[in-house]
Image (cartoon, rainbow, N blue to C red):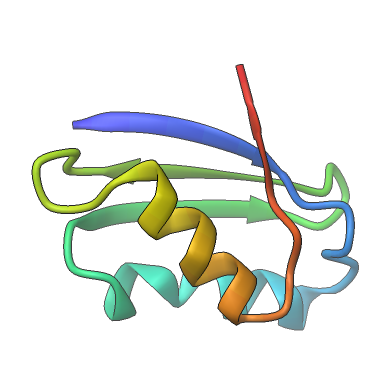
Length: 71
C-alpha cells in the first residue's frame, strides 16, 4: 500500500470532503481517503498495483478539483 498527500486549494466545505472521500467506493484500489477542508488537503491510501498517481489525479479532477501532490 502507498500513501499520497495532496493539496486541494479549492476544497472549502464538508460537502467537498464527502465528494472526495467517495473515491474509496468509486476507484478500485483506493483503500482510504482522508480529506480536510480546514487544511485544504487530502491523503489517499491505495494499492499501487491497481491504481496509479495519475489515476488519482484524474479522478479528483473529474470531481472538479485541482489537486497538487505533496511530498
